[in-house]
Image 1 (cartoon, one colour):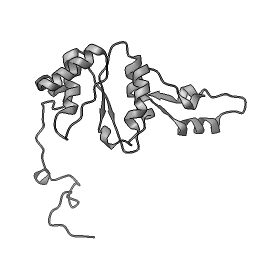
Image 2 (image 1 turned 90 degrees about the horizontal axis):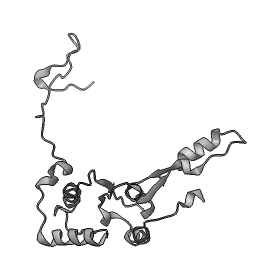
Image 3 (image 1 turned 120 degrees about the vertical axis):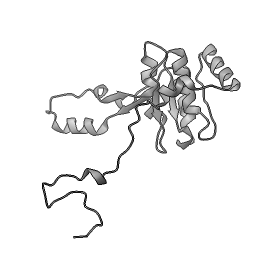
Length: 177
């Protein structure tokens, strides 16, 4: 057993923790989330014009820029100003596909249930489809702000694959036939 220059737990006595050596962190009572900070965001004139134009023509808006320039905050600001909160946030990963923005088919659960099902039972594949960010926005009763964050990490075809679905506001689910 290693000997350490401190004793966090006092095994010799009652096993209690010595509170004098525990690290303390200040409690932040202030909400520092993007949603909370949205009311303090001040968009530049070009961004404001782009946002207003996208709203006027009913078109999605793609905001690009260097890290830390306020792209994410702009989405939360738009949702706040337009009363469209909460923002539907999709975090892109290097393996993300356009389909991931629309839906997820729970293949593992489907195969698990199929394995346990009786021979004469029929599983409905539609029961294994989970709505994702864009589908949730498409079926929402009210317009929604969808933040597709870190889109630059996606495969090259990712943005192009979304164009049809965004233009038509419809898509098909290949797994359900």
